[in-house]
Length: 187
Ligand code: SF4
Ligand code: SF4
Image 1 (cartoon, rainbow, N blue to C red):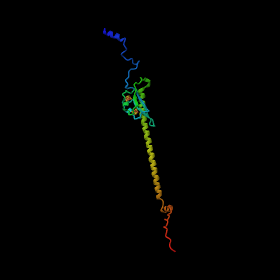
Image 2 (cartoon, rainbow, N blue to C red):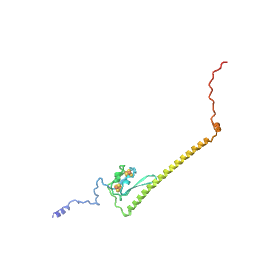
Image 3 (spheres, rainbow, N blue to C red):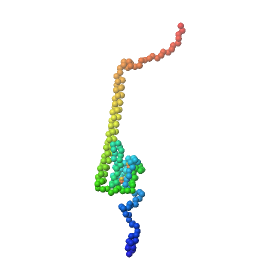
């Protein structure tokens, strides 16, 4: 009988459950959701990528050294480690939202694998190009130094080849020092 009364009373009460997904659920202010990156603030240290255990972050790099942030919300486990480890406040943070459900056509896992591999490869290419340019510069400096040394050696050789007679002929004429004035003699 009491159960019947309770059931009857519940008919006139507000629902005790949340009508998700028709109504948004409550989210605490420190909710750990999607990652947002701010390139204008980032110092590109890549610590977030290194500390992300899921491999949800990767940076690519072009030949000028410019990096680009890539993030996969479907691999992310919303642990917040990337935010915690970031040394530059405001360059990465979490928002109170989750990723929208992915559809098969997006092929998110395979596409992420390709993005990740390409990003890692782009950094290798950048480093190889940087090394090539540094080696080139070093070789040019060494060539210039060798050229300067050879030129200096040639000058010394030329000077040594001049005969004493030529040295005398080209030397400045010896001007005798002015004679001391002498006292006039008595006639
Ligand atoms: S929240 Fe965790 S899993 Fe997601 S990107 Fe950051 S470190 Fe990786
Ligand atoms: S840890 Fe922070 S500053 Fe460093 S690359 Fe990531 S977002 Fe940028």
